[in-house]
Amino acid sequence: MKKILTIIPARKNSKRLPGKNVKLFNGLPLIEHTIKLANNLPNEYDVVVSTDDSTIQQIAEKYERVSFFLRPDELAADESPAIDYVNYTLSLLKDEYEAVLILQPTSPFTLMEDISACVKLFKEKKPATVVSVVKVNHMYHPDKFKLLVDDGILKDYFGEEKATAYQFMAEVHVRNCSIYLSHIDTIKKLNKIIAEPCLGYEMPAERSIDINDQLDFDFAEFLLTRY
View 1 (cartoon, rainbow, N blue to C red):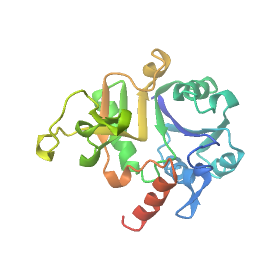
View 2: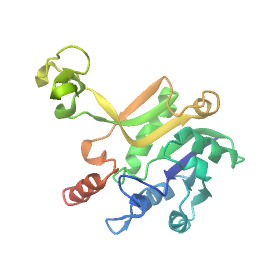
View 3: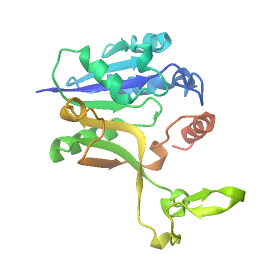
View 4: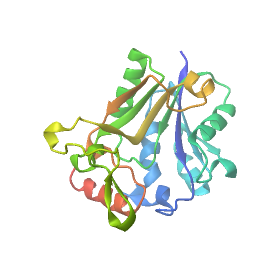
């Protein structure tokens, strides 16, 4: 049986929250929560941390199931597409994989049950991609989107006014940036991480925090006291 390559990507530089991947969260560097989770995956998962940060290397080396690949500088820039570090990682490995699983270290509340549910969808439905999603809060529903134009005038983003009473709005979801699971053909033949057909796995809002700035980090710490 072909394995699933699991990649935890983590760049050293973060403009909005410097050093976020090694910032202490609930007693551990933020990325270590995801590394611990991946370290407990079944044996059919190969786990690799892809980074340009020697500090993250030291964290990864504590876990026997986790390998570490130093990412070249050109694959660690702000504008570097994710598919490039995926292809680079695959180029360093000899095994044939069924799929690539990406676990983001900025999503510390992801559970093993979330990964298992995504893999189950992948195995049973055989899509090109499975991604984790979260239902959009009423306040941020796209029917409410506006553009702030000249002189502070608000314009409807979609060109026409939408009904914004809750009962009239469709239920919509957005990727929560926690889990991406892509068939190997999606990666190798299409050079994409996400392709059609793409299935969504819904995670609850309290597990869907994506830490990008200090406010996100503070809110995640608040969630620790509630859940």
